[in-house]
Image (cartoon, rainbow, N blue to C red):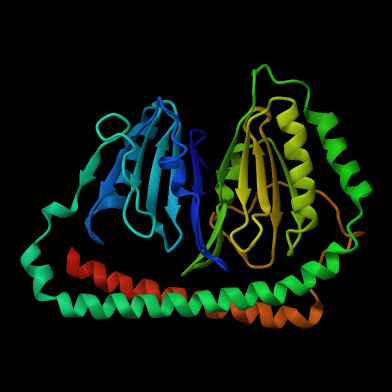
Length: 335
């Protein structure tokens, strides 16, 4: 079972629009009373291992711990967030280069790279250049497949968008609002942006372990994330009006930042849109969802495009896997 004090998210993903990142929460949007330590260093120098060990120790203390995973290697961490301590640690290297806003005040730089054998790296510089080039070539090819995926899917979205029944959508949203939203005691509400899924070398991973933490979980099956997005936006607005904080999870396969999942922690309430390409990251299969039926609404993939879309996802994932394997070879040189 999931630890009640731990959450698991992404803050970046490969996407049809390139590397999609919300890692700026650690720089531009960091609250003034928080501290964010930035970890620097070469590939394979132990940045993720450092954060994992730190997070486990904090979690043992019973404090809230949020794990932010790397989209290109979901076994590694991009960051850890300790809300009770108003403290976070983040990998500040490419593709999300981050530095402290006010060094020494808002955070410090932890340099793990300086411990490495510079002579060994220098000896292999030509190999490093070649591996880096190959890694980028595979990634760029994956990117083209994702762009093609988005282009094909857009036909289904345009076709279905014309028939959205706004009255039906509003009715669903208001029914849920009346059931759960009274009036929060908070003076004002805030929303946090996260990703509950990300596409990488293991496919489109979905961090379902988060959903085990909530008493009420509503599910919509919507490959287009079209009707579900409209419903979730309505529910979000109603929740914010009642001063409930919300975690908004964006869809990495969407060009228009559609909401894939929505969490209202104070009410132990969550909503999620599932699609045909997601892989649940948890081994447990006893997740209990309350379905929201949108079958009477037209929100489905054009049948002739299904095979093409499945193939494009497979090809994109294969290229990302090749890119990851090359990057692993690069890490071995540095470590």
